[in-house]
Image 1: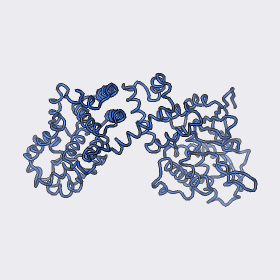
Image 2 (image 1 turned 90 degrees about the vertical axis):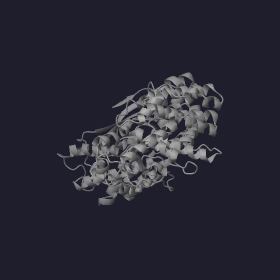
Image 3 (image 1 turned 60 degrees about the vertical axis):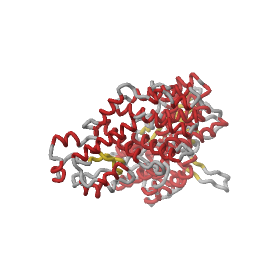
Image 4 (image 1 turned 45 degrees about the horizontal axis):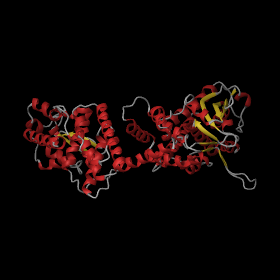
Length: 597
């Protein structure tokens, strides 16, 4: 069935047609890299093989002994549909742009190549099958005939050579194994994953009696896609969301790439696509979407009302059409540079090296442990406005204190974002750094917060507060203040855990003798003074050992540069009085950090 309008053609096409001479493809610059994961590849090959096996049971073999298809048998097989693809090609262009369906077409190219190589390696028949399947994906040039090489599907430039040497070339997939993933970019890893999954699945299937030549026949002739093609790029864009049945849904970042590159003149589009793809390669799609979210918060200064893409399209670009396209990508590049230099690899380039180290350590802590992103938005906006390293240092100190204090006293995430939106407004309305740094909202305590904070430090279930995030943040924040912040930069990653000095479950006589009152243990075990940060996983076997053994075998090994943990070496034992004394000292330090203005 074929449906045609002025701009759109739609019809069912078997794989043999879609991978035939008159179908050449390229992936437009606005598309994401290959993003299917292992489960997608497994589902694809399982669906195709299962569709074939379900019909093969009661039929004669689909091919003769020499590998040629039995046409009369083949025609009895019901077609299997893999969804639809949307293509765009103007008459003067020889290649279709893949608007929707690139994940399927890339994966099918890899699957065909794997089947080609399995037949080539294992089946002693005429060589026509591997050669014919090779023509589905790649044909070498012929100098004598004046014929250039034919690459059926041109992937992104970043993966082009890799795809050629690992997929397109004859027998290329045979040399790929699990180790081939080492040190590769994420898109290249996914290509290797696809090869390995398809090979493993098909070899298992062969051992159970499967014939890859029969499968190749079924795949080429009876597996169908609905091909929707249009000469209008705008029509293709309108269609691609409707028919994304099997593909990975496009993210806000993909949609923003689409809408902004589409607004740029063709002669400049590649330059801006390069900027976008370089950022995308460095961050990854998920982190890029987060970056665009930062831009959205900075511009709109309000909580999300719909998706990022819809808010830019219906609010930002409606109010300022000129921001769409080149100006958006320029702005995104600038925000990315600030994000990279001030947050991901935090440095402020101050003449005071101590400020550089302290800034790095505090940002590292917030980035890895603080539970939301509003502080990042404020830092990016401040730095973009003022470009003042020492001012940014002072701004971070004040901002972190205010937001952490709010979080540790139960202020909701939405309210913290509202606080940051107010700061963004102030930055827009002031031209001097000192005016921002002297704002009352950055330099005074909200009513009642001093009392709330002190009470939060004293709760008996402190270990469990904030879904275990409070104790980690506060302990590492105390540790940072004790740390030598003059030269040593810290990286507070996900590997930090929180351990109890007095064990949660007391079994050893050492602890039962010193902490013999059950009521005391219940009241003090999960309090601030009994907690210590460790680098690495917990060791429950070491938990109940006497204090001196526990320190030597456990705390000492996992202390590294953590001052709070190293501090335990001055204790020869652990007693109720020492626990209470340490608790009091840590409370005083926390009060000094957050409440002394």
